Image (tube, rainbow, N blue to C red; front, top):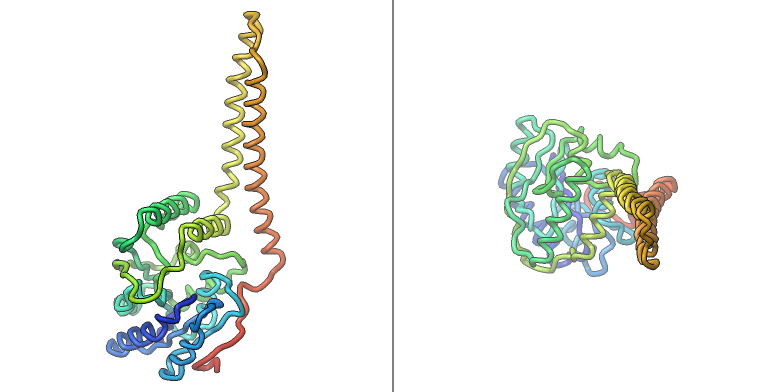
Length: 307
């Protein structure tokens, strides 16, 4: 059986359409399935729409979070509750083309254990949002050592891959990078991002920046190494200025005013504060992990065996 996991946040206009379209495609292909919607603490009628879809279709199940825990938590909640031999994760806004699920499933039948959805393009976006997204992917690829320039959360995972991900104890997770990190036999399916048929995107430039910072820090220690680079930069500046001061001392020239001293203090103080900020951010992450709180809290379920 195939489990289709659909994280949803304020997607009341898309639940019924997503359930109908995906179910129709999988039924036509003869693929046994379940649809698992995960409501990430939506403020609209998303949960009511999931309940209605579960009443119409016995293959639809739903999980409702007690509050908004984020998309990463929603995806992992789906992976932990999925009962299929393989799982597909995709957005319920149908920007990930659901007909590609069949192609992924056929590759899984051939023995592939991870089937990545690779974007051919990002669809229509504003210039600022496209720049922010491209910058994020370049930064995350550089910091993790994994090329994720065209990757997405749209992918199929074999049961053994799902079990491996579910055994990971960390609370701050980055699904897209972890699915690369676990390895296994891989294949790719390319797709074009579609435009929404209803509703609007929940990703602003601000939320994308927050998402980038959170995921980079949860998966990579690269920002900590920036402190070392800043230290070497400060050392180089100090050597240059030290040589200049020594030459001026030998030649009997005096420094004019306190401008150089003030600039040095401001420069070094800025580097120190940046370094402390990076260290503080990682200490906060360690603190969150040590508390051991759950990634999410499920307040309600509907449909299938969770009813």
